[in-house]
Length: 277
Image 1 (cartoon, helix red, strand yellow):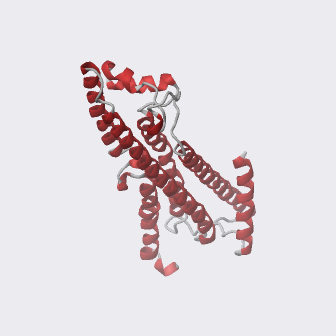
Image 2 (cartoon, helix red, strand yellow; image 1 turned 90 degrees about the horizontal axis):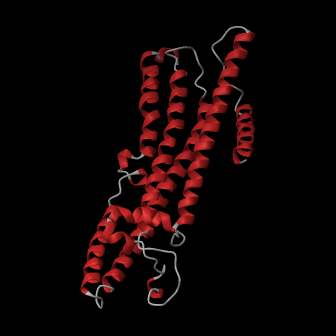
Image 3 (tube, one colour; image 1 turned 45 degrees about the vertical axis):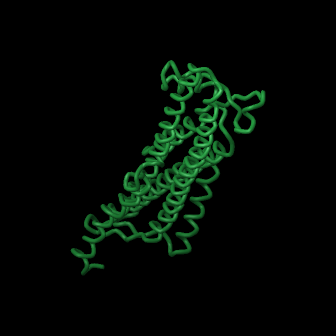
């Protein structure tokens, strides 16, 4: 429904801007039929690019909203989900790690019923990494297409108009996509920091529960505390999705696409065909 509303509005605005800017760029074709064919292809490609940009922007915005809502409080996962992740800690610790606890540390001494566990924020961080890893690379596609749009209009191939107005409009949508992708990365980092803060608080609470229990439980809790601190380091060192290193970020790679291929073709235009410009 969102796309059904946004696509017609965007196309109307683009058509309005093109008309105000002097009309459509000329196409290198002779004859009315050929010009209509070329113009139809150009508009079909333009519509497809706009739809692609809107789809990527919409998915990015929804993912940002998902991260924001998820970290507005402590997540409550189904018991089977918690048990599945707790099983990774081994049979000796899985039951203790999956035991229900109150979300707030100050409520854990009372008999307040709860559906939370020590693993909530660890599961959150892994979910953030997996989700942004599947969404982040989508930002590459619009940049690749726009880069191809610039390359195919090079005068190395034909006497195309630059179409700077149309490329400027598409560039605006690309800028919106970049802003949304950057916002998503910032939201993911903020969510990770919040997860780490809560996990550190849980580790302090867990350390405080070691005393006053029998020897067997004390050893289990000490081992769980050691493993839990390893989970904290695992969250801190995540390098997937929005947590990837700078030059491995899909956003950075996307920006480099048109600056490399398309920029090189434009440079050849000016160097080799400068006399015709």
